[in-house]
Image 1 (cartoon, chains in turn red, cyan):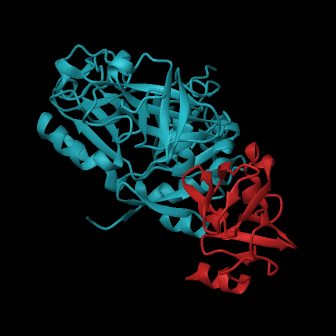
Image 2 (cartoon, chains in turn red, cyan):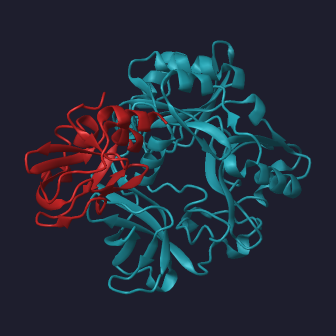
Length: 124
Length: 360
């Protein structure tokens, strides 16, 4: 799966889709593939305030666990609650049905990578 | 550290997209299409596992039965030819050096299957306890596990013989394409299944022949671990180690040997800790090495030995050694990273619908 070019990417393997003053966050195809079968996702609560780079949750697979970091600053306005019972959506559809968090941006995203630069990072 | 070793199936695994990782000094397949898919396929159909890394010994000679009975916990007095039995090799203090299966091939002829990580130490211990009778045949043997409810049909079709009359923990000497193949009705998944012992140079041919049956898929060590944990089967280095006796691991019921085997004075005693099975409240899991406390208290009273999301159950489970004075508590707190998860004591096996002991 190639990384969509309309998204921004963090070095910690989260993606960001900016929609006006809001942004949707998830983890990349590279990240879900490296983790393997995802069995549990812990997300922040609606109303939580996140700083860019702040830890915001946990993703667990059968063999590994990985912290989630918010690539942007903002307030959580929605989380993907379907991941509570069907975390495998992150494996199956990391950029769409496996989305994780929607935030109201406190600042424009900064320091993130383009799809091309992120792909380079993954190949290193 | 010596170089990582490869099984005769290593190139096959790489050619078929396996994720490989070192395990007990061997480069082993962890998964092919994915741990959950392989786990579920084993519970529902049949899977083959490359288990060529495990050690295989022959032990034979005049008086072998009597001498071996003093070396291991297995009750050889009641072990008939054609049957195999699970048990332990202990140190003088009753600590577990390894868990192993012993096959009785004859009055004074035995076949032993031991863990890869322990094989060298086992060979040394057995050679000291039963001098001049042990041979390490691992270099010329392979091992393929065929596991899952469909395994009996797959095996009958492949070998052209009936296996409905082969009972649990029984074995038979068979032939595959003109060469010897030992088949035992044993396994490590909780499902009906067989462990197959071909000559090492025939392992790949057997593996490919098994996979020609469309009901069979390859499964890696990742699924093997979730399958065994759901059934509460111990893994050496986790639930079993030299610090704990078989009784502490909850296995005193199988210590029926009356022979004065090494460690017998301590094997049935609970010195400090007891293995406790725990069910967590949700999908979030703990891992080997995480701490056990009582809810709301800080004092560490134990350590998780294995923990995982249990795919066939939909929640996480764990095994943990808990200080004996707390082992009868109903509820524990387990640390997972910075959070603390509540776990309730439960009985083994976690997963109760396994087909391993099915009677025909």
